[in-house]
Length: 536
Image (cartoon, rainbow, N blue to C red; front, side):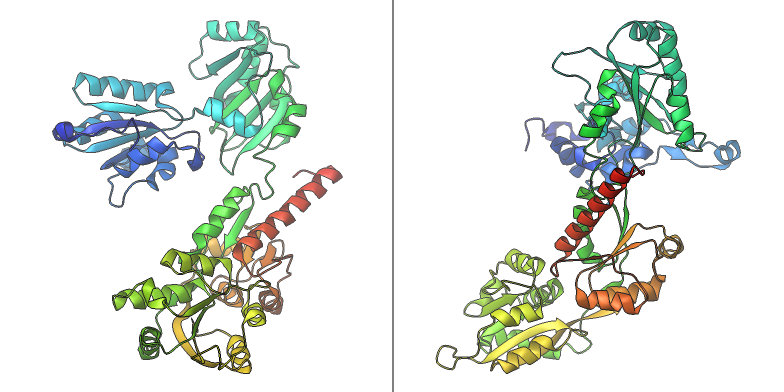
């Protein structure tokens, strides 16, 4: 519990409100206190642009009343009606609810949030404020535009929507760095105000939209050329011209500085739309890794994992673990660990049932899932993380040192026989048991299928031969402009058999190494484009 956490038994009857800053867009910029408050919320009232950022941290079943209402009148006018957030907040709080009111950026810089705080205070409703990172500060940082240097120049923040003539005059007459909150289609007008107030037309200027997200885009120009720059970049005219933008005016936004400091937009997969066709349960960690490289992952389940049709064999094998039937158990996938763990829980067993049994695991993820279960593997391949790699390190059966000659191998119904044959050759008896079945998932939505076939994805990751077959089966073949990345030779061969060109192959069968290999490919492509003078 943090020092700002409020224990509220005495105030539960009147509810409590947390005014929370959701930051400029990157979910990773939420504070620890913000996440804590969201987890305890009964009601979450958020601006539409930050609802997805904060909702993932709220508990299941949290109420999220919408601030925009589409009805006959608003449809006719073409503008959704805006509900009075202050009334929504106070109505929920009067009902004894813990309310989180989330706004973009920082609530202290949001005029509507300030009005809602006053309304709560007047009504005697207790509230707290959880600050957030303001867009005017966070977006330049992500754009590689420092606002101050060792010389300590002044920084002025201007909201172009409400700035008075006096404000423009004061900022224009100074040499301070100006951070202007505006919209893309009014950037040129703001630049004109500064020039009219005394700033030189050749003063450097950067403009960033969708800051701190993987849709971020930044243009570098001057006050006098920004209109032409946006037109040449085909950013304007655009239906998206109303989107918020942060403009930084001053020497700190010079192109030479951004070339060295644009850390976010220079990530190896920045802005890449990457298709992740995996089992639904296994996609999250890979997607998180892709996001760390700047990519926009899109998860499409192609495989569903189901119990075996005849569970009796699996049940006998698990009972054999307890009665000492096996010397070894070998796990070749996370799903195999999950299947055995579920059987253990069904019988009221835990990791202690593995006492006296040697445990082998193929792959980092499989080993990690065993450790999470409370079991430390005795054998993980020292080389290639595959059945072949496991066989290279597996000891032959020795009747002197091995009291039992039997291995339990829980696996998928479509697994290869390589490991079984290799263990038999080493002198072991193998109980080859189907622990789970893999079946083809339902087709993704129509727009996803069209994006796959039409080149809407920059890359697709194939983590097994079955993901190749199933994706093509449920969604169609990826467009030939899409980068194809495969986890190993067998998967690559299957992709080629389906008419796909394999561009990237993981150096070892690990999903994390596959993501690293794609990032290295993206970095090389970016470097080549820069050296050739082409746009990235």
